[in-house]
Length: 250
Ligand SMILES: Nc1nc2c(ncn2[C@@H]2O[C@H](COP(=O)(O)OP(=O)(O)O)[C@@H](O)[C@H]2O)c(=O)[nH]1
Ligand SMILES: [Mg+2]
Image (tube, rainbow, N blue to C red; front, side):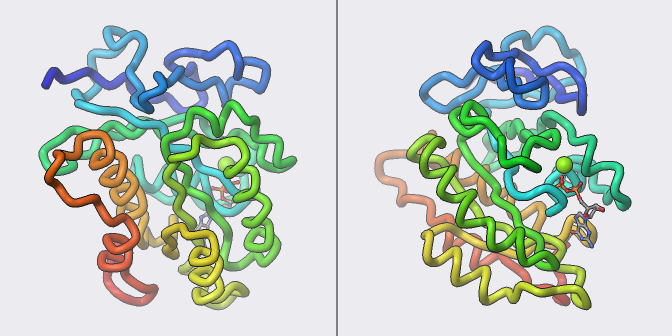
């Protein structure tokens, strides 16, 4: 298998390749064109000398109401840091690349963040169309963000690819005093829509790595599954690996 080189995502800067259809939505949504197979290849790998090699690549999008912690989740996953304060919510970043090793295969996740468009739920349909996976977030301290999940799921079902991997994340699980959405409510909603669910915290790091690893594993297995290999069970994997708040995972 020949390895490709990842072009490093630069927050708030140029995208690797602006697709004509998404140009009108602002640079934050200018997406790299994805071949119909779902794999994404950097258009100009020679641009970066510092990128890592990878075998397969996928686009992951973060969606959910403004303020739920999408940008913080991405920064935590990519840089291992937590950004406190409100300035980040208006800024947003466009995408970050991260190469993960999944069963000896280098999987590049190109993770897209919205740049504030979600305030008006005007995330464009082009944004969904190219996604191989969507992480849908609500904030456990904000009931409205939870109630809006149904509307987000409706959008997703309408505009995303049929086989898109969707995972529901209840973020800010560290905020025990301000919590208004019970974990069981998240579980129930996820079950209703048949999507895997976990609570996360961009602040403490709870389940952040797991959420992205689970998505990478699912996408890798779908793409590279041997005929006699059993199907990867995403939900079972998540349920087994997940740790609850107050426990041990970071
Ligand atoms: N306590 C806590 N605060 C968080 C967490 N994630 C994000 N925040 C805060 O929530 C606010 C909005 O986060 P941001 O990432 O900008 O949300 P976005 O609009 O969905 O991108 C910021 O003040 C963050 O510091 C978390 O896991 N726990
Ligand atoms: Mg943001």
